[in-house]
Length: 97
Image (cartoon, rainbow, N blue to C red; front, top):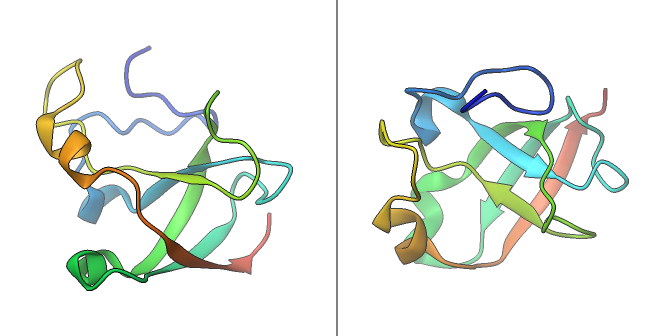
């Protein structure tokens, strides 16, 4: 169903602050891992912190993650996701599954 991650967690109604969720390539970061993100661009520093690898994605291959910004109570991609775009971050796996 809508908003259900590969690990079975529902992100429906959540924001990045309440979910702290990322999608990963499970061959690089195991699903269920606790991960620290440190964004290199000062514009994104407010997002630095601890997240959980709860989902996978078709376009998430290798050393890429997909950062969950929120569902914004809609089934389509919110403009803020497009505005966020792509950026670089340091990723440290704190605890594997």
